Amino acid sequence: MKVWDLELEEVGFIGRVLDNVEEGETLDIRIIAIFVIFAASVIGAAPPLYLPFFKDPTNPWACMLRSAGAGIVLCLAVVHVAPYAYEQFGELSDVAELDPEYSFAGVTIVFGFLLMMIIEASAHGMGSHTGAHCSHGHGAGAHGNNPHGHPGGAHIASAELEAGVVHVAKVLHDDETPVKPAVMDDKAALLKRQVAAHLFELGCAVHSVIIGIALGVNTDNRPVARNYFIALVFHQLIEAIALGAYIAIARLGMLKSWIFIIVYSLTVSVGIAIGIGIGDSFNESSIAALAAQGTLNGVAVGILLYMATVQMVAEDFSAQTLGSIKQMRYRWGCFISFFIFSAIMSFIAIWA
Image (cartoon, rainbow, N blue to C red):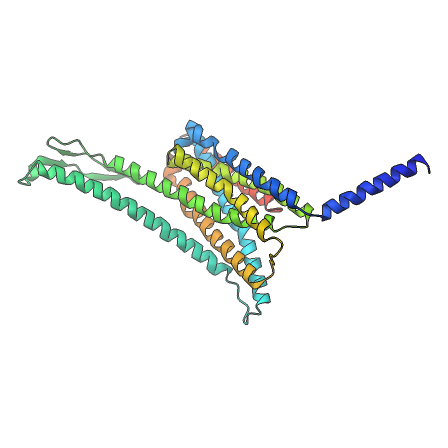
């Protein structure tokens, strides 16, 4: 036998081995993905906690990054998740032989949006009640120093509306520290940012567990699993940067901020672990699986859509926020970063 015949046989053997690997088990890819995606999420979310300019809501670079986050979340809802919700409910309609055929995807999206409305209203209501209770305590102390209730002891200046900003003058009282409503406005803005961070975490967590399960149940298609794994690494890294930016301006404290990051970073890994556990028995075409995945995806779309439109775009692209940026190039930078990161997430949607 000639030397080149042996070489050809070796090449053929290696090719057969590679073919078997390509068509074989994906357990190694899924296990590696658990740790790599966790690390990518932490790496993306952690830096904003330690860079000072992220903690200043009016910093132009922080505004541009939050604008990028808005593009990421909006694209995540509309381009990544919504098509899956409609596809799964469409398949459910065929499998369950619904007559007439009807997709519940839109209903679950509206439910997720409504859920966020209720959660945010409840959170702000609780915060306002707490603030009002504290203000009432201060007021009682003030009247205690003036038992006759004579109005001459207090001088209340008028309130003006200028360029959409409420300027309320000091409330002066004998032997009392002046009360500055601007401080209360700052507290209300901080509460709003904290609520936004919590809602962002919730929306990303629901979606991340679902996409983790999708990778975890892939037991025998290595090319798809490999491409999906790589796409998820970049997906979670970019999303984590946006989440970290919102956690930074929420000023939750270092411990709580790290809890947020760790919980978010674990969501895809937990989903992959669940998928590995149910992979052999999981039937993605069953009525129960289609209904569960479609519902969760639809609710996730509603949550993310609310976050993108109400919490992010409406806030970061408002006249007040953009007006606080003095240089025009930074204002345009917000729109450009929104577009660029939306485009990146749309590109990643080809695989994830």
